[in-house]
Amino acid sequence: MFLLARIVTLAFDALVAPFGSHRLAALLAVSLLGGAMLAVVFRATSNQAAIARSREVFKARILEMRLYPDDIVLITRAFGGALAAQGAYLKHAALGIVVVLVIAVPLFVQLEQRFAARALRAGSRTLVTATLAPGVDPRAVVASLSGAAATVVDARPVRVRASREVVWVVDVRDRGRHEMELRVGTEAYRFPIEAKESCRAIGRRRSAGSWVDAGTQVGLPRIAAGASLAGVRVHYPVARYRLVGGELSWLAVFLLGTLVGALLPARLMRIQL
Image (cartoon, rainbow, N blue to C red; front, side, top):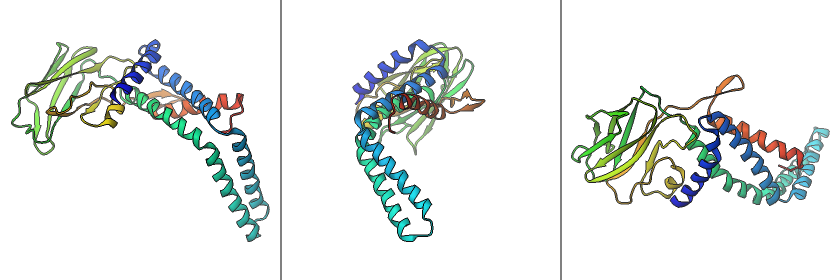
């Protein structure tokens, strides 16, 4: 899973590289392209003729219910027919829906990792939290965090025994991608802190020992199996994007772009969605 996630991440890096630090443009472009691609894939993997027939039957049954509002027998029969038509639609669209979901999940993960948060700014402060493996006492183990000259790490971390966490305050003095080194005993874990706007994945957290996390947490390096470190979390601000007269979350921009991107080929190619 980690290797697959790495390949997908590199592909997305190449896709968004031309946009540089223009994050909104990259998010919109990928969303529009993704919506168009998903619509075309759905057309190729679903029974379009059968879907069209099911939709027409459904419309006819709904119209029948409106034409005979006082006849309980006809309404009941029409309602049953509408449900049957919806069932037929799902049957003929099932393969297309499954294939679209398989493609949409990595697309969603990649965009969430890149655009849900924004990079830190020069002069800002963040927290780095290390979660230790079960059985490792955060008050007894030697744990430290260090970085380049552009970062200043408070040498007095907060150690929480109940949650097995060690928390450092990090001051970011300059823009850039700053490499940090977290040491737990003799083990070292290196990861970046993003302090420069780009379309790269922003590594906010990484957990050890989970194949799901390996596929969904793509911004930070993998933690070695059996390590004393069980997880790392870097706190970043939530990103907002100015669009259509307001500030939207990345998810709202993604849904809007995907919808618009899907509607255009659907109209041109007469795709039954």
